Image 1 (tube, rainbow, N blue to C red):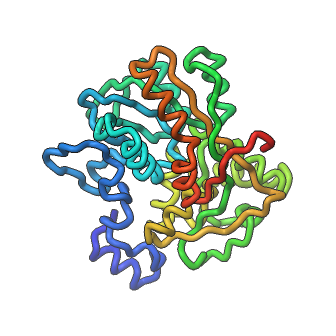
Image 2: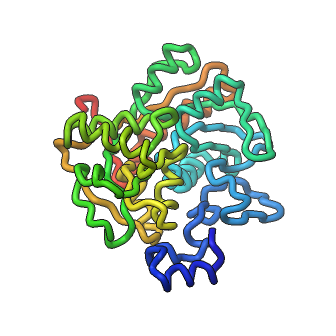
Length: 319
């Protein structure tokens, strides 16, 4: 991140868009200022935005009673979901740990016995339940990593995330092929949403549009592929590195509700994709009854009301 003096100079000469001038403490995650931490005793507070932040790892590793691997698409909903779950199940208060990195990476962590390395730190925490797209959950059940049946609970749709006031004038998916328009797009190697986006692009403009966004613009550098789109896309928009990116609708709504300088452009239903979110108990889970309690809770009216705040809809079997 540039120093305030350099940034001010860049703004003076028009090198950086005005929406990029927010202080780093505002634009860098974690955006919920500790609300997504279930630990009661937090000891020394040492969170330095941009430098030392484990934004997608939540709670304490000290003897958790329930460990959740949650696809990162609703990290922002987890704080109120956990609070309500603990109100209904007080024995679990302060004893949940959860991760919200992309679901493909979480599956890899399961295969590696729950061990993960971030920066200079390595730790092991084995999941009790895993949550991702329904198709992905079914694949892991077939692989023997999860115990069926899958439990679907909500759906989500795509949107185009843009800086506040949409300075590039994006009107729809077809505009994303515009030469020189800088995009942040989920990497198909890591994030399942990329398959949904490619389908939407094809419906909006045929294979030519999908190829332009995910091949031509990648080669010329105007599409930057993310590794964790729910963090990188809004951050890069606020920094002025990109001008648009396709995300889940819920992620844009959260950013807007949080007061960050983000907006979104609706994608018509005829072009859009709908994701079904599901979960299942992890085979060999240390806390299988706790996992089952969460899976039951996640479909309850109380949980669905929390999801609705961010645009999620309850899963209906006909969908």
